[in-house]
Image (cartoon, rainbow, N blue to C red):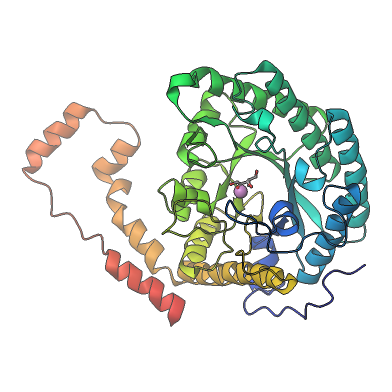
Length: 426
Ligand code: XUL
Ligand code: CO
């Protein structure tokens, strides 16, 4: 059965998968993925109203028939758009059953079904993850729970989600710390909770490697929502955590644009922090609304943002993961056609961002300006400081000898912004 016959051909303006940019195909720069949860699951419900879109795909929600209908619709959708990847949580694929055994049996069944659908296509799994935030058992957290029994359930879900990710050939495995945080320090042992999260991740790495998972584990930082304070606040915090617990060899980061802005950072700042630390893994490609303080998960539209993001990605030499549209249609955009318009918007916005970022690099004025700005550090005292050859006393003597430093050069921000506009708009 075809679900999207009513939707006409989708024409892209900038996305041209085979087109070469800086010597690499666009589709290699931009491995786009469909998020199972939003695209096949989210139907527009919010805390003030029920679903506005029909995502039943001809079956009764909560059944395995529906799980399979979602897979059918998902593959039809990806083929129609030329998407080559998908991402999933365990419980996006099947409805949770009364017992763990039954949920796991359902996951075996649906992963067989999906594997069959993948055959003969170029559709692959970008990453998998476990939903450790929806069930009320996780109200105090999963890896950070005060209950050892809940912790075991979290471990069981991670184990099974890893099994399914490996079975589907996933490139990565994500930990987004849904409820790994706290509401009040009055009831929280923050140190113990973080040590336990790290222990769960360590066991996940050991298990994953034992079943042949060769990809990267990812932490997806987010500062708040659903918890008031989440431990993986931002990229710098998550990297510090990974290093502290010896997880940095197996983990990289999955940076979500909307999470970056919730943390009070720009998207490109978070990407730069990862790249500078050799930990840029994957991207959840969406955008927030700067007037709203929550995670709106909009499809990317802001071409300044996609350009600056792609500038970081190109400078870093690309991602080991891909670009997952962790994004949903606005509630009133509730038709199947809207689902395609949303992805076309996101894909074109990133394709244009890629073209413009490559143009900024080829233009060379901005990179040249930055290089020149720090030229002092390549010679004389600058080179000595960089090489660790100086003492504080030597530098103090030098300052005394100089009397006063040369006038510091202009930062030329407005000049640089004019270059960006010139490249973006001609
Ligand atoms: C929530 C979020 C998640 C993760 C996967 O804000 O981004 O969907 O991407 O658990
Ligand atoms: Co996300």
